[in-house]
Length: 520
Image (cartoon, rainbow, N blue to C red):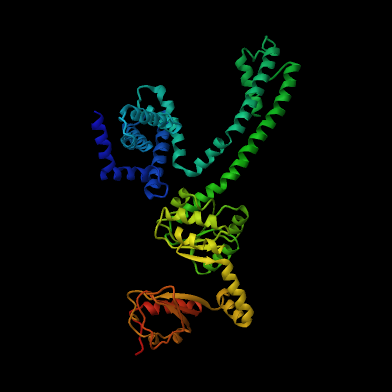
């Protein structure tokens, strides 16, 4: 029996059908980045609201058979959903394989019973979780002959929470403030019980005909402390009137504390809700540049990239830098860029085309590189290096290119000292977007200029100034102002040019177009 279970575990682990099925369930039930998940959530919300609507309709009408059949169909979908979540809750075969291989490594007999105990405990933990209980209570009302079970149909409304990230964020407010709200609830109950006891002692002896038992006093205290005040029970003794005044004043205090706790918590959660919306928007595009760190360097880079209409996403955990980012009207997520789950959510393998790391701490930059490389081995990473000693470490971690801030600043300063007028001219070209811009133009495979001399390109026609080029054979070696008659263009070469934005766009089209007119 044990050998059969072990073989079955290994069979499941190696089964492509099982992996495809599990991936399908993950996409449908758990992965918020997938369209299938969004469609499924909307469909389930519709099922919940429509079946509750049938319950309301049933109060004064006879339900048509087609609606009864529809409700059975919905319950069947609920059952399949619960089974899917039950399967995803814990991979039993992995536990068996793990325990078996550990026993083999330690040269000990394998105890299948201990593995089954762990699997049972894990599965029962899910079955008795709040989410699972709500799902099961939503299924129970399907047995229509037991009318008392129909009240549980209202638990389907709680299922809506599962399908809305914003509502989940709101619920987390109460979970995270559990201690404060528990103390407030205890105070609330104590005030009600104390007030009800005094009123019942003084007026429950026949003085007040509306208070026949202690439950009436509890009801009066609850209505009074909630500031509703129906007026169906009013105190008649002096002690009752005094305790009413005390109760009203106390109720205002309790309500004020409750409002303060919930409001402050919701304000804290608003950033989380906004981040969910940002992540949702990011998934609509596949050409985002991710910038980690929004200090002075990040701010300057973002302003330049915005002018060239790049889609940008910034991850920053410092509140001051975040506020600047929001002022600049860009997507900013308040989090740690080393967060693996966050990197997965923003689509480091799908939606991000390049990463720029600009924090002023090389240790942090190193951690970010390692986190990104653990998910994506190929994405280009441009990293800031603050200390020369850490340059090789950043390279080894996986940085594609390094920006040495201090060295670059020194070279710029030296350039200004040696030739201030030339420096100002270049600075105007690079910074003033209303004037000329520096750009790079790649020579793609279908360009008619491949194999042609550089002199074949009509730079003057587009009022373009040619600076130099990078050959694809040696992309790190920049050739400044090469001889146009001797230089032959190759596929994937990069031309570095200066010109106006419109001219550059026209020039790029000219370089790639089959209709380009080449000069002999």
